[in-house]
Length: 250
Length: 74
Image (cartoon, rainbow over all chains, first blue to last red):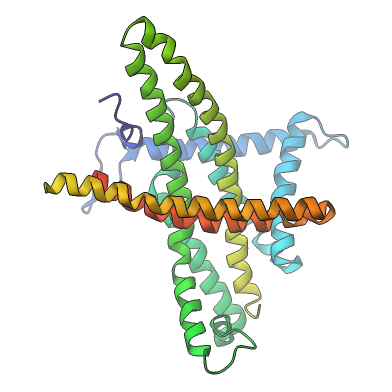
């Protein structure tokens, strides 16, 4: 089924099925691409930091802008004491960005189009918020669910809404990235499928298939934008949620 | 009605929710743009907030898309 738009998300075992105590821990194409992503990030950053020139060259500028973007994001949302989360946010942002971008190349696997990957990251972030908040503020961290200046009559209701909104955060954080990547790749595949089916109809079909071909090119450009935007949004929301662990009063 | 047909109709109905997310994202960026044209100096600082709002609104549309996908593939 070459035209099946879901086929591109299938996992393959690269090193035969490995089972240990009932758990399958085979080396899949997903794991291979995660390795490629980490190697690419490390390679680009090492190469860009190699020279350390006063007037940056092209590659060094990429590294500096990359660093500066995340640094600006962390300090503008969390303030100066949020700096200790910078390595964490930078790793998350780089991994998601590189996974989205590498996945856009033909025949490459998109790691972030699997809900288990995005949800694992989202649950780790929210777990970190709870752990850091409780170790830093003790039980006072639970003030987060009791906002200031709310009349006593509606306070239980507001608290309930705050708790539900906090509990839905890991779900929405992971599903947003997963949904965007899945939907984008399916749309690309469906439009590319129009080209194949139209051009099979003969000469008129080949002429008509220029339209979906142009649309596929335009959608690919849009998907590059979405890939960056979703990585940015994921890291920004991680900052916003981690800010709740540092400053629960707001 | 055939169960298969009902499933596909349900997946189609679930996609209507994405229209609501589209309206929400449109309102956010429309208001951001009208605000940015009134006061371009303050626009840059609020772009991150506009993106966060759009991401939160879009996430709810993604939920309905997810329901559609689950219905379609199950």
